[in-house]
Image (cartoon, rainbow, N blue to C red; front, side, top):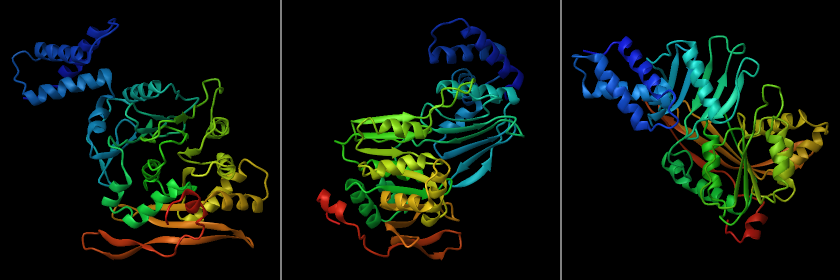
Length: 407
């Protein structure tokens, strides 16, 4: 016999009353109280150990964690959670989307969990400020959109943060990149080439940037700048991590990526790592790369390396009156390499292109394709087979020579 929803609801209410007014209460005390109330309310009804554990965990998650979302967050096979209002929760597993059976009781329960999320990171989201980026305690990235922008209830998208820091070796094992290309990029990071990682949504840009950043020599001073802190640089002790801040309810106090880049230049950085550029801050990032901060890394949304250059132009134009020719010269001289990632039809993520920037002449960017992914065949089960083919050798080798690294 399964325990009724009414009994489960009463267990939650009694447990909440029990912990009210207590300044400090341990997690185990909450679980013990829930178990005790469940036993009282169930009476002579038989409750299996599994069901008892599920109910107690449900109560605990409602008290201390994120309610019905917590089991989804704890499931390591789930990479993304998408909430479209209180009645529709979708998950991504193995690259495929599924709708779950879980639903919130009502819109208020979902809104309570949203406020719990943003409170933890000192951010605000309401009808006056209906869009917010935040992160969970474990580092997972959260995007929230409320009414009046969201028409079908509060929208929450959670990109889960991997517990294990993904290394370039892991990406080689997953065939995201070839060993030859990975070794090449490792040397480029060590030799302080400026690298820009581009790709579409969900192509793995942040994961790849994080893997590259772990090849930065440990004796350097690094500053990371992100909307929501996700990077996990492990081997650098002299590390400064900065995160943007939304405006308060009065529209004051906003700190943008552009503000942080400008501030970082006064902190004596050797490298600047910008999690993602989306707007006018692209100009500040490019100027930093052009003024002695070699080895800087960043990401951006684009459909190809050439498209990324066009998007960077547009970003710079949104915040500056510079002529387009001057902007293109700035881009060409700042970037050394563009690594482009894509999400394939079989849901795998691949490095599709690695290109070298050679400059800007006669109204055109000079680009040297170094690696290109070529599809060889598609299996009957829909899996793609291909490889990252080397096209040309790198031409600008002076940074390798300055660093004493064989290329």
